[in-house]
Structures are given as C-alpha cells and as structure tokens.
Length: 281
View (spheres, rainbow, N blue to C red):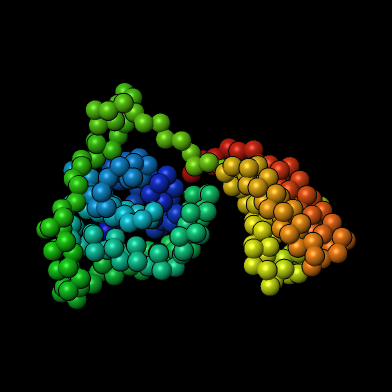
C-alpha cells in the first residue's frame, strides 16, 4: 500500500493551491482529510516551516519556505522522516521550475497544474523505492527533525468551529488584492511608444532614461501612491528639460514635456479592474 497518498503545492501567504497530484482515493475519511488540508493551507503563515496534523488513519504533513509550501496526506504508517524528505524534494523541484515572480503573480487556483506529472513521479519514487536507497537523505532529515521538531497538531485543530479557532477568535482571511489594470488603450500604446522614443534619445543621460522608463512602468503596472509618483516624475522631467535648455531647441523640449504630460494623463486615468467573483475550486 502507498504511504504517500496525496500531495499539493500551495502559496503560503494566502493558501492558494498552485498544483496537486491526481486523486485516486475517494473514501469518506480521506475526503474529510482533504477538506481539513485545505483549511490548514489557509493558516500556514501562522506555523513554523514544518508541521504535522495527526488523525486516526491519515496524517497531514507540511513543509514551507519563503512563500511556497508543500503538503501531503500520508497513511499513519508513513515515517515522518520519509514524509518530510518527500516534501523537501518536491519543494526544490517546484522552486527550480518556477520563479518567485511567477508564483507571486498567480491569480487562479492550480495555475501550475502541469507540475502534477512531477508530483506523481516524486510520489511514486518515495512510495516504491526502498529506504536504503534514500538513506543519506533520510539521515539528514532525521537529524534536522531531532534538533528542530515539527509542530504537532491534530486534525481537529485544523477545523474552525463555532467561530473559534484553537481557542482564539476566528481570523477573517481576506482574498489577495486584485491589482489587474484595465486594458491598454490605443492612446496608451502611443504614449508608451513616445516614451520609448524619448528614452532612446536620452541613452547617454541616465537620469532621463530612468524617468521615461519609470513612466512606462507606472502605466503598465499598479503601484501604491501612484498619483504622487506621477506628479514628482512630471516635475523632474520638466526641470530636467529646463536644465538642458542650452543643449536642446524649443521644439525638442516641448516634445519631451508633451510626452510626459500625455503619459501622466494616461497613467492617472487607467484604473484597476473591478474584482471578479472567485472561482469555486
């Protein structure tokens, strides 16, 4: 019988599932364990890097580092060292395949579902390869668990009952903010092209190159305190062109300032999209 039954990768800060193994078990106890795993995933940020939730027939193990956590449902016969060795291997495989920016920008559940094949391969290896072939890896994990034991929970601890969680008032977990901008307009594309032209004309003047590059960034991506940044950037561009009055003619100065005003207007009028309803996964 397999010792590792199910595994998934989640984002720590909000519990968003990023990938998971194919589920072949449909017993009532296992499905209940899956439900509790989802609840626990929402609270991983409260726990240290490693932990286990013990039940009668199944155990949930998790291992997290930075903003990525790997979780597994194992049979009670599965040694903790094997489970954590599996989770650590899975973590390295996932973080080697996907960068932190890619993980941070994921906005829908199971955005990296193609990683399922890797999870299945690693799971099969740990289920069917003898422990003697993994002896060095297991010894390393056993030493780590000896000096830094994982937090131990019960499966009941993962539930939120009567509005109370582990004896504390329930924490309301807000969904990750939606920072997706409205679609780029034709006038916005024109302002981007003009900013790129201005940046190209200022390749030898680093500060002006940075100014126009930042304007492109502010238009394309959401940024806190956007209005203040736009006003300061516009002021710097105007002052910079006044400083270069002796090196540019009037039409060149008016062109750069005009592009700056057009870009500033486009940045300030491009709003965030309204939040769409979450999918029911």
